[in-house]
Image (tube, rainbow, N blue to C red; front, side):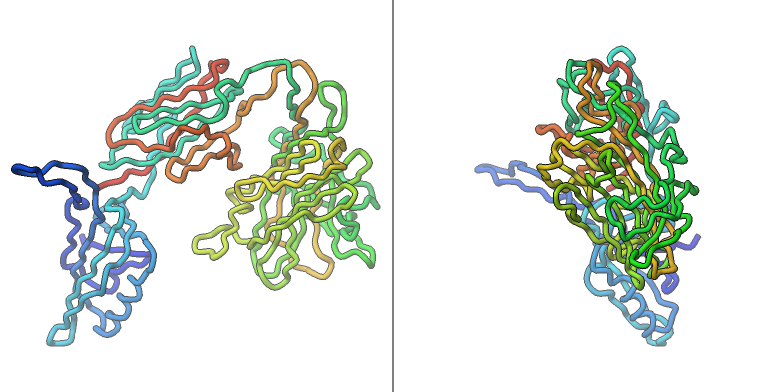
Length: 509
């Protein structure tokens, strides 16, 4: 079978025939030692060095063309993937070292050459990921053993690589929970608060609406004719929006006055009463999922989630606006009400789908992400953007209650190219600090998903970055080669083990 070589997405063996590949037996080892007063040396430490792969080849293209083409195909200035067809599930992160040596045959019909690739890590990585969950527990990847007495889990993991690997751990809470402790042979970490109680005499949070149980957003109703957009009266509201495929999307633009610059549809819902029978929330939280991906340059559109008081006066809003009629630029805006309603701040982004090689990938609102949120704590208004909340303090809004939620999707009057994918895919509304006697929802609600990326030191809860939950003193750690054990514990009041899934790639010398 012919050996093929791929580097940086290019099949090099389309332009050369492999004579020999020297992959050696792993990286070298640097040793630090100190000479003794007598004979010999004392060992101090050692470290694995980088490694090299040397490829000897013969060209079968025109020599001049081959020289230039192979130089171009291997000229990446950053690490790129290097793979060989005889190791289909292995890749190296490599860079070409030095020049490509080339010796021309006297006949000028071919030339022999050598390419040297340097692998700074000294290791290879599997292409596919290994997965361990309840479905395949007990197989070659390991075993998950839940303990229904105390809610803990013991996990035997089999890392078949020859080097440590950093796993991703996904924990789906079956019951409310306030804490996770994770212990492995390479380290330990904790999330949340080990002392968080299950139920105390304190205010609590209550979920008022969840689109997971109302997938078509049927509880939101079309506004009456003539109702003004609470954030911008220049946006007409006589059009329609409707549930389409993945969420609420633009349907019709409707009529607009001569002074209005856009038109679209708007729906509204008055918040349900809390357990005390009261409508309105001074302390309020909303988690939502938005999608913004243009199928062509110049497409435009507007999306808004607006929070108002009972009299339709704006308290705050989160929205996406794409008015760029030639390019792909959009912005995410945060609006606040009060004595001086204004756009608090905005952030520009490109409405691509975060495809590979995008210079400015849309990592907030692409097809596989989209999670964001808004939090009102008295006078403090917080808006989620790229891993953190951007907060503003508006004193006059401290005691103002959010009582209604408006959803608006529209199109600019002077544009006939609406953005292909502009959608509200999910919405959750919660009231915090409800003054009643009951269990308070814990940090991790039933059904919530906590994801821990050990390699990149990241923690996410329901898709939102939550590294703030990380307890100081712990560390993100790896799995050693071979079989090792992970122990996961929860809050002492939670005796129901979570659902667990581990994902990792094997590394090899």
